[in-house]
Amino acid sequence: MQTHTQHPAHQGTIPPGPRRAREPAALTEIQDPARNLTLWRRTLDPDLVAELVRLPRLPAQATRHRLAPGAGWDARRRAVVTLLADHGLDALDLPVWTADLLDLLDRFLRLAPDWPAELRLEVVSDDACRRFHVDRTRLRLVCTYRGPGTEWLDDGQVDREALMNHLPNESILRHGHPKRMETGWVGLMKGAIYPDDRALGLVHRSPPIADTGETRILFCLDA
Image 1 (spheres, rainbow, N blue to C red):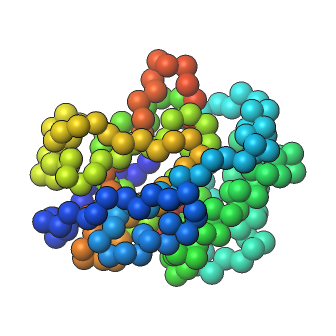
Image 2 (image 1 turned 90 degrees about the vertical axis):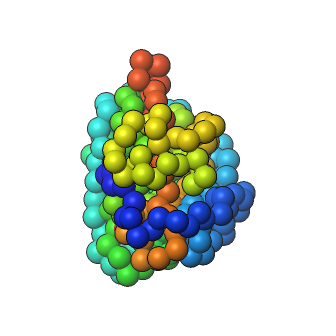
């Protein structure tokens, strides 16, 4: 996961809290200039859960594929099929999951039609990006299909100066505890280079899972 502290020009504005809803339309509210996170608080379809339960034990690795702006349906499907194949998985055996990945990709590209996109499917068994950070991206979509989801901080919790100076998490978190996305939720967050002068990029991190025996399966889209 890429890390980058927020540009100093974005200091001084505190966006409202995340938009949370059980409908996918909530994701479009990321276009609000003052908002840096929207959450689709969905519950995974039972057929999708059944496919995920049947997955073999997957080694920890991340696979990536890039799409040019304006990529059509065939290119999108090839990208998703390739991501799964790089993990030793056959999309034909996972029709519900494949359809869900394509649906999230479609929703993401509607909000970022003019930007190249990178797809990533990651199996994680350690703490990965354990430090609070802001991505060096415009937009990032995340969905954790297995294990705990991404953790984030409301902007009132963040010491941006400590973040910019690469201080420890204990210095960045001013008070309280991180919020955490649930398994299956879809989060859409602004990064450090989103073309907007009002929003602060979302401060977040991977949940700590080292030595717990847990494995995460994370789908991520960047633009």
